[in-house]
Structure formats: structure tokens, C-alpha cells
Amino acid sequence: MKKIKILLIDQMGVLRSERKKYEEIAEYNDIDLCVITPQCWNFNYKHHEFEENTNEENYTIFPIRVAFAGYHHRSFYFSSFRKILKSFQPDIIHIFQEPHSIFTLQVLLARNIFLPKAKVVFITWENLIHQKYPFRFSNIYKYIENYSYRHANYATPITVSADNVLRARGFLKGTHVLRWGIDFELIKKQDANDIRKKLGLLGSFVVGYVGRFVIEKGILDLVKAVGQLPANVKLLLIGDGPLKNEIKSLAEQISFANRLITVDSISNTEISKYLNCLDTLVLPSHESKYWVEQLGKVLLEAMACEIPVIGSNTGEIPFVIENSGLIFQAGNINELSDKIEAVRLKSIDVSKLVKVAKQRVENLYSWRTIAANLHKIYGEIINIHE
Image (cartoon, rainbow, N blue to C red; front, side, top):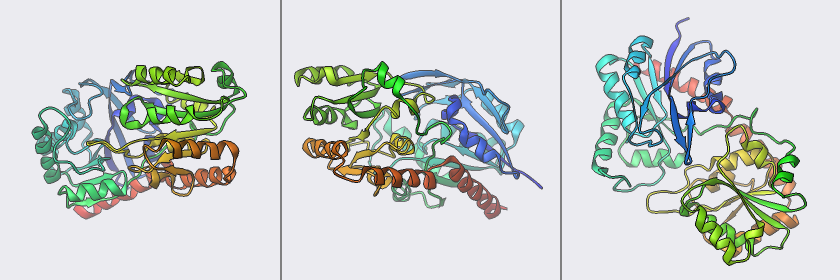
């Protein structure tokens, strides 16, 4: 049986905990999988070096040098990328980057020169239509996007909204909504009393947030909303970002500082324990000119840990939660406070919400399900272009 040679190019591969998708894809007997990932990358204001695999894997991975680590739109790989491409001779190159990224341009140019028969697939999360990119030299990225649309063979948008935006922006070739996945061996319900004790959360009702500390994530709204609740309700914020000092200042202004606990960005292997500290997780995002919530992966992780979730009505949040959590009007602090209180007092059937959420995330967002979709997509691409 001739195997389909797949080259995945993915900056998330720096983290060992993010490689479950590779294992699942490589389980298929007709797939020969090779992965390229940076030697280092910056996630959420934290630098990460490539983490070696601890066990023998069913795929090959190459960590190679990259310029501008952490800048998705302007990063690119150095010369060893070309050597791997020519040596592996992939049938399909799947780049986990946006069409306006220099990464994507680099892949397409290399394919056109060295492997003209290889098919290139890109991923897109972009769920807003805007005329300019929020970077310097916006016109350059617009040119790269148009070049990608002409020369790529297929696209795997992460959401239906991203698919709609992609087509509205002019990509008329084949697409398949891929969704995104989480590792259920890593993210699951577990005892977290040791963390609760360490953070001084025992005996409290704990509201949590995990992510970037930036204005569009609505964190200041969350601080104000929890500040309206009884004294035994505490807020745990996990992450980092430019809003950090403003959050602390606001907490002091509203006499909330003694109920606010902040923890710097934690590793993916620790996230499950910290999520299990919570009584509810809130994602209070706002829409901005250039960004609206593209998925809200932390919602999926909380749902897998059987933590009730509350989210604003922006971007993909309502589509992720559907009937498995609570939705409030973005920016409405009183409504958010009421939703948190409903979970605390169990004036709604919290156990039913949690059960529905767990089932939903297992059915739609496991890496095994995503890998099955990818296997089907790869087969279709090969058959269409033979």
C-alpha cells in the first residue's frame, strides 16, 4: 500500500503536550507523517524551547531555527526547512498558519520551486472581514494572502465563520471546517485540593479566567462583576499581559484585592489541575476592530474538566458553548454577575450543564475526531488531483 506522505508545519509542536494530534494522524497505516516545528516559540508572553519527546513516536519531528519566534505573520524558517522538504518529498504540505503569514508564503515558494506536484493546505482562524491588517506594511500581508489564495490547493478553516470569511475574501477552492482539538488524556477532571490550598481558595467559590491579560478579553468586566458578589467568592486569573497592573489597580479601587489571585502563565501540562480549582470558568471577551474571539480553547478545556462555563455573546463563544453553559451580553457587568451567582446558588441545573458540556466536547473536539477528519481530507486531496 502506497502511503500518503504528509508534512505538517506547526509552531505548536514546540510543546510536547500539543503533539497528540500528530500521534492520532500517524495512527493511520496509509499515512507517513513528518512534522516541522520551531526550536523555540513565544506563547502568551512566555518563551518556550522545544520539548523533547519522552517516548518513541510514530512520526518524525524536526525542530529547526525560526526568525521572529512568536510573530505568526512575519516568522519564517531558516535553510534546513528546504533540505527537509527536498529529502522527505511530501505529497501534501499542511501548514498550520494563516494565508497572510510569511510562513505560508515561504512554503508556497519552496513548493513551486522544488516540489511542484505537492499540494499545499493552510489553516485559518480569521473570522472578521477587515480591509487592512493591524501590522506595519499591511499591504505586503494582503499581497501574501492573495498569492496564497492563487497557489494553495485547499484550506481547513477552524470554524464555520472562518470558512465564510475565507470565501468572502476570495478563496474559491476546496475547504473543510476542521475544528480544533484537545488532549483528553491531559485535560480531565481530577482532584485539585492541593492547588486550592496553596492558593488560599479552600472554602471559597472560585471564578476563573485563563488567557491573555488584554483589554479585548474583557477581564476588567470580570473583576467588576465578581466584585459585586459575596465575600466568599474569589477570582483566579491565570495568564499575563499588558493589562496586569491595571487589573490590580482596579481591584484595589473597588476593595477587591484580597479576593483576587493572579498566577503567571502556566504550562499546558499544569492547566488541568488549575482548571479543576474552579467552580466556574468565565470567558468575557469583547469584539474589537481587528479581533473577535476565534474559538476560546479554554472553554473546551474547562468543559472537559466538568467545570461549568460562562461566556460572552461574541465571536465563536456562543457556538462553542451552545446549550452546555451560560451566555451573557458582552460588557454587561450586572448580567455577568447574575450568571455567576446562578451557578454559585445552583438556581440552574449545573450538573446537567456539565454533563452536556462534557459530551459535547468529547464528540466534537477530540484529537481523534480531528485526525479522522484530516485523514479523510488528505485522501480527497490526493484523489482529486491524481
